[in-house]
Length: 127
Image 1 (cartoon, rainbow, N blue to C red):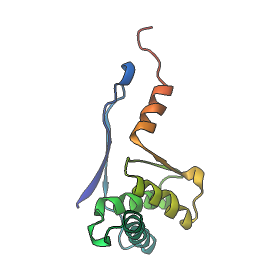
Image 2 (image 1 turned 90 degrees about the vertical axis):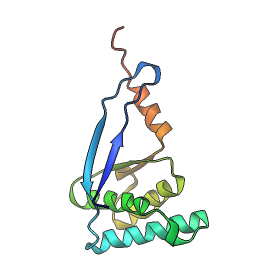
Image 3 (image 1 turned 60 degrees about the vertical axis):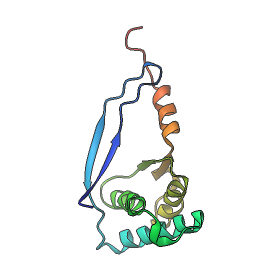
Image 4 (image 1 turned 135 degrees about the vertical axis):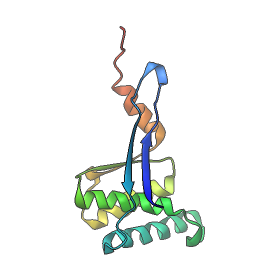
């Protein structure tokens, strides 16, 4: 994988208009021991929680947690992971605090929860 792409599609429930955004990032730094370790731990966590073999856990899932840790270590003080993949979300919430981050710094939202948060801030454009 040359790079990872994160995006939020345009959402229009009940008249909400959210501008499309996309961020292209490089793959996680596999040379960083913490990043490699959290990705390995994520693969094991997902495999155990889904009763699957580690070799069929998607690499993208492990990279999401790796990128979250890399961002926390290097560029930001809070990350939000939006996914409907329950084992992935649980892995992020469980593993990232082991690297010195607290619950306020790590958020996992499902797509529905994100839509609800967007709806809470909705201001009608033409009212």
